[in-house]
Amino acid sequence: MNKTISELEQMAAQVRRDIIRMVHGAKSGHPGGSLGCADFLTALFFNFLKCTPNNVSVNGENQDMFFLSNGHISPVLYSVMARCGYIPIKELGTFRLLGTRLQGHPSPNYKLPCIRVASGSLGQGLSVAVGAALAKKNNQDPNIVYVLCGDGELQEGQNWEAILFAAAKHLDNLILIVDYNHKQIDGPIEEVCDLGNLKTKFEAFDWNVVEMQGNIMENICSKINEAKLLSCKAKPIVIIMNTEMGMGVDFMMGTHKWHGSPPNDEQTIAALNKLPETIGDY
Image (cartoon, rainbow, N blue to C red; front, side):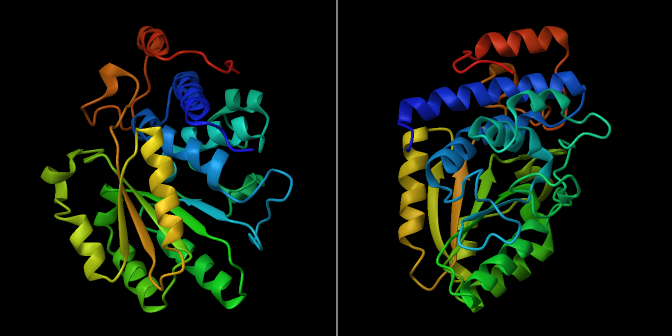
């Protein structure tokens, strides 16, 4: 049964607590983008992804598929997977520890549910998702392929080859979500390599474009539904998702400095004090 907006908001708050505790415990990781994408991934996994812990398969046949291209934000994916029942919640405490399944970048070597390819080498995830969407088309599988990438990641040229190919093959079963927080590891996107007007660019490549406020749960649910309604219109779909890096923790917001920096003990306590414990920590 789908969760209400209020229930999703509560779960996203707990996911943010998980992220802070995981990155602090490992003394390594990427909290900024993970916090920014917590609302979206919570909504996607709990209310939209047609796949359950009992039937998830590597080839994704007859189920929706999700690919995390910006694999460095693995803490948010692992937390949502645990809260949905794909992995034990207590396993979150093993994040980035040597020999455990929850490595810094997701890897299929550890037979984790939903992890079909290694990700984190930026620019590659969309190409994989395009291949999966094409396979579903060829197999007359009606399900959807979702892929999340970062905005700075779109500076990689391989993405634009995949974007061109997806439109040429009319992959309307593909939904790309761009985490548009305007920040990357070296600074603001506009200073490093400005992306210009993303909406116009995707439309020029013959994609359907949906714009979304990625930290407002009601808007997220509405816009994912809107994107799904476009999945039979002969064009791939992109959701340009406006988010705030570090969302939920005030001192992590408005800066790129928490892209890949773990909080110390004092900062962790301060961050957790900003986030309600709604479901229960691991």
